[in-house]
Image (tube, rainbow, N blue to C red; front, side, top):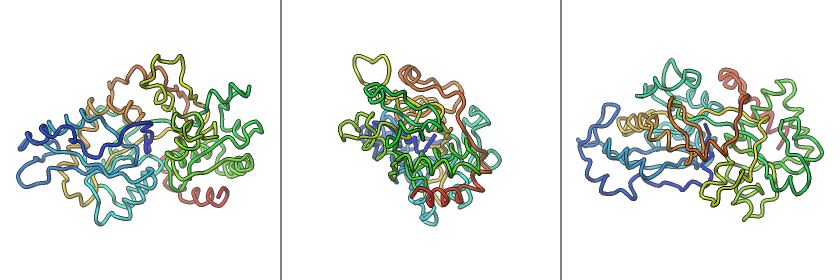
Length: 369
């Protein structure tokens, strides 16, 4: 999930509207019954507006399929990193900018729910989603869409050239050989940054995580606003980072970063140039919700239903580099081959995150910034 994802749309193209290349399909579907009990005709809006983070992406053909099935076109409004997008949605909740919000993850979910962002809706296909990711199962205000692991990534070429073994755990990152090598995201504005901090809380506990961050700071950790800047500008291991002359060979990103770096590369390499420190991972789950006060709730419900369809779920891995949550969804071979397998990610109970997140963020800001 961010998440997002992510957040995780490593190298994905931005999608301004669903039907930019499918105008004929959009125009010929008037009157089609929409999922969620609505129709695309009869005076209602023919556009579903999705508010999300910068990493939202979906194939044009998949979004055109949604239009063909329902008669609705999709407009996407992006609002920075997931943390910033959630904050913006809260600030505008009395006059929502869209119908659906996608990208709130388990680290920020309680903030969205406590502020009344979403109306309840039980999506079609939810019975095919495992119960352990349905974190709002009693009220169904937030529908789980994807999951993913936030982890430290490393530039294989850098560590090979310097004869240093890459780090694998949180404890490794404070060792002298990794001084001035790590870049991470601001916990207050970035969902992967927040997830990484929560991973340190899960690892060292309430009594030890701040001391850990003092050690990271002393070891030269760099903090930037969001994932795009961290991965594409500062990280030396990404294709974009090489062009930008990024000089940090360690970055907080995702376990799915490695396949993003090899998609489209010919001939396919034996391994990705990016590796994953699997002992630093925190499990994210991303959700979608029907925005309270949406102008097109029927269209919003239809799109949430569609996000749980096999078409959308199987499109996500190579669009937003996240894992599907629907049972039986098949991931592309390149995603499976090059993605890191994380058997034991850290996690925290949602209730604990809800109760302590704001205090943790304040403490982190005081300690690190």
